[in-house]
Length: 83
Image (cartoon, rainbow, N blue to C red; front, side):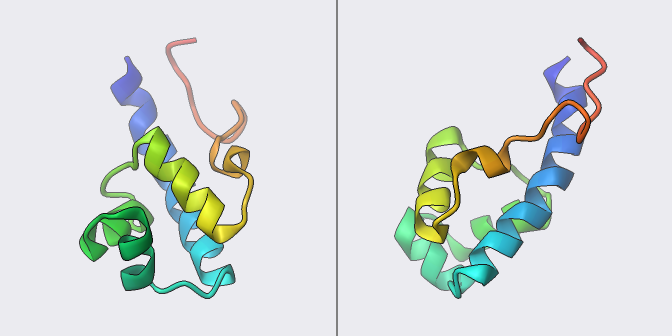
């Protein structure tokens, strides 16, 4: 069930995360050091290949000076077929 939500969430997050990081003038390698992950992990988040944990998303939001809720889609922004 939740796996049906995953592709829409990945698509939603990838654009939001890259935009926030770039607006904060933080490179992928810099962000990876700040969060404590491999630069490839940041790339995977921003390309929609994987999702960050909630903790990683909150840390990401703090470093980009964005409210974490920016990374939470509304029901209109993603399809949720299990509701």
